Image 1 (cartoon, rainbow, N blue to C red):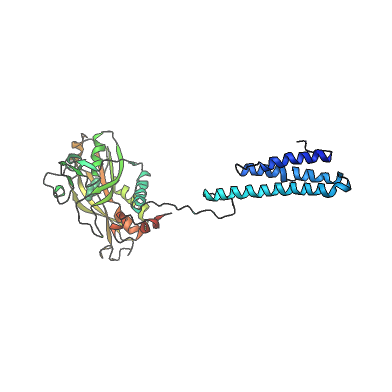
Image 2 (cartoon, protein in one colour):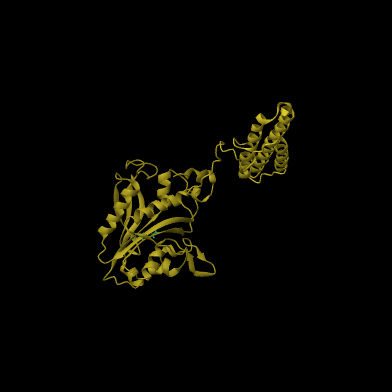
Length: 349
Ligand code: DAH
């Protein structure tokens, strides 16, 4: 820009023009203010350039010309300061400070629920064995929750005392286990099936430190030709080692479930007392972790799968119990109270 002017008069006129520009200046944002500073107050700016004219001014005019120049400089500086203040105060009012040296505002980070953390860990281990997640409804019909699973009409689990039925339609209920997903997947008849089914289940139980009317399970199902009990054991051994560590011992106890034959209960050695016996394992040295077995031929038939051709294993485990053990929690009710003081302890876990 050509602001280098030769005569005093011309310079004074130019100063007037610039003064008007300065007076009417309004910094819309920090960027505009910076442009203003560079233009008028920068090292190569107008104020500096005009100041440079002093040396050409005849001695007798130096005083009054100097005063004019100085007033112009002060005008530019004061305008700059005033606009800067305005921008800073609006930034503060809108919650954003320009002072980049201020430490940042800490962002509170959320946390996953301990039951979610444990469920994810369980699922992730089985995913490494090529199991995929399948889900099903929590409001279920009698067929998928009981009948197809070979539970006869008089089975005690069907009792009103144990199961929440819909009062408008007693054939509809809140699922008592995630085994309903087994049936729904088998009915699709896309074999082989290798699924892991996490979900919430409901039982009509008195709420205490150890039991609740709802909790979470993870069910597993593998159906193919030639699946054996050895496959079941090997799969669960792998799970236990990954979940609880190399040192943990495993035992299977014969058990009964209407939907599996043979059926077993799997225990692991108590990791708190290392099998010596403590309050948590009720002095037995063992903790019951899951139920399992070979899928009953009737269940396969109920889903239209040929039990002569296909076999399979299934297992089901609770999520709350291992979460209690892992995080040293003593009351299951804490999981559903939504107390932030409890929940925030799991951030970063
Ligand atoms: N459904 C059983 C329960 O809720 C758990 C279970 C046991 C699931 C054995 C299975 C199984 O798939 O094979 O107690």
